[in-house]
Length: 502
Image 1 (cartoon, rainbow, N blue to C red):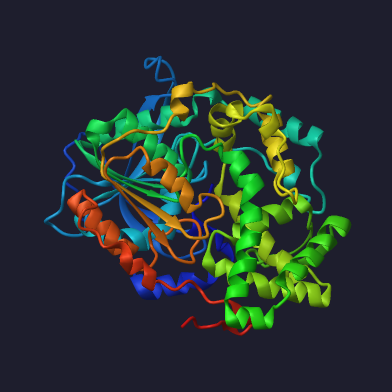
Image 2 (image 1 turned 120 degrees about the horizontal axis):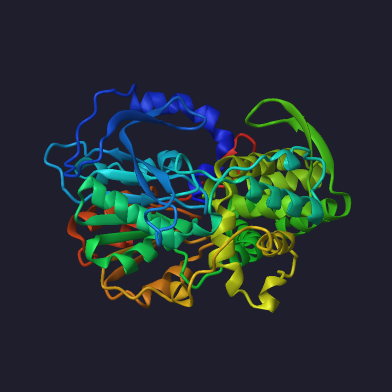
């Protein structure tokens, strides 16, 4: 799973200049945090992909055992950054940020979520730790040449040869790149930095990490924010690949029908989607176009697998959904899928750029083994994600992994104050998933942001709610009704821009 904001990669060249205007030039002289540990830190700046904005921080690394059961054996470096509290009268308990994916690095993905933490960062350090296998923490990387020819999909034999070759080339014990080892890394960093208690924020897959941490190290956790909540029992691959695109289709049709202007402009959206998907299924068109990020001309095939992934990613953000009816209508009317495909490719390429191969280790150790034979071959009525799920099951035959215990998949029972955030139309972690987790939490509050998708900490009044929650470590005085005033991005009726919601 991915956090919502990073999916609009096509926008980054545009908002880089805006970021400079809004934030100005960064100052290399950083405020110091109230760290009591002995680990050395140095001034650094975190780059933001597609932007000239640099985030000032204090960076460091910590050597930890690759296999925590044998602490004297091979060590790996865990890289992290601390964003010191802005005010002198700062609190000693920081906010630890757990990224999504699996496969995103916290130091690379935080910038997309900054708005949600600006208030918290006034009085608390923000700690970004690249999970093992990501970013600069012993990253798992593979040569992606098998995917360079975008006019064809690699067949099963080619994919399995590639995945086995990738695993064989890693100078790592890949079976120890799981959530259970990662939370031990994070706790070691906490201890080394001198923090006695911390607050947790997890986004998407990061909510699994946060739940695992709060169960293992409850005495060190003061409060928890879960954003786009994934229950421990949830099989990541199956739910995302199979059901995600179906949810996006149902919701975009329903939302457009309920919107007066959208319904007037696109009264037969369901028929248009069916017509476009028929073209994709039957013809798998190869189109030549200018790449939305690199500006280079390239050819690519719009396969059913690529469409299923792209369709799902549209649903992560109301901004992306807002243009979907227009793109589909235009493709149906003109029989030209290039404009639609260009947007799909922008998102798919953004995902490939941001995610490494940690996903393989996590899915093979924590998800695929817990799927029944029936669920391993399960398909939605439309067949979305069927091939992707099949591939995930197959690759685990070649990717070294160590299956987690059954206890890992049990719900987390806790009294730690927890704020659970959901987008109303989140296609991969819908609000009912948060409700499943909330059943086992004695001190919690669920907040659903209207009209939004995956990852909502920066939406509307949520940053203010998050600040108050962390300040008080309690949900008792929170007034979440303010989120009802939030208006998602209006639908594009034409290419001039979105309508203004009343």
